[in-house]
Image (cartoon, rainbow, N blue to C red; front, side, top):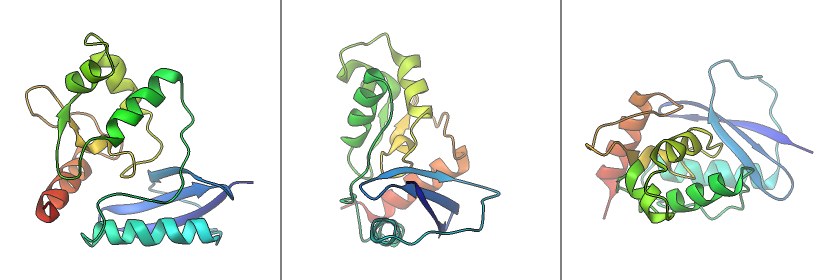
Amino acid sequence: MTYTTYYESPIGLLEIKGTEEAIISILFCENCDAMKDDTPLLRECCTQIDEYFKGLRKEFTFKYMTNGTAFQNKVWAELGAVPYGKTVSYKEIAVSIGNAKAIRAVGAANGRNMLMIVIPCHRIIGVSSGLTGYAGGLWRKEWLLQHEDRFRE
C-alpha cells in the first residue's frame, strides 16, 4: 500500500509517498490532494527534510527506493554521491558512469528522479556552470544551491 503526506517547504509544497518499507517519491506539487496519511516512515522523512531546510542535515538516512532502468539507477547513484553544497556537470556524471557521450541521457535520467532533494539532482549543472533543467523549476534549483552554500562546512 502507498501512503502520502505533504511537507510545506520554504520553496513550495512537497508531496511525499512511501510504503511501509521505503519512501518512493518526493516531488513538488501545486494542486495536491488534501488527504494525508501518517506512518512512522513518513514522519521521519518529514523530520529529516525539515532539518535539511533548517541547515541541520546534509544527508538523509531514512530508507528510500528508486524505480528506474539500470541506466537511471546508475545515474541516480552518482547523483547521490555529489557532496552537499557542491555541483557537478551532466558531463562529469556521464564520464563517472563510464559513458562520456551520454550527457543527454544523464539529463533525461536526472529529469525522471522521483526523490527530489534526497537524490540531489539540483546539484547537476551545465558544463559552462549554468543552471539548466530542474523539474521543480530553475528558481527552486537556484534556491537549493544557495541554501546549501550557506550551510556548507
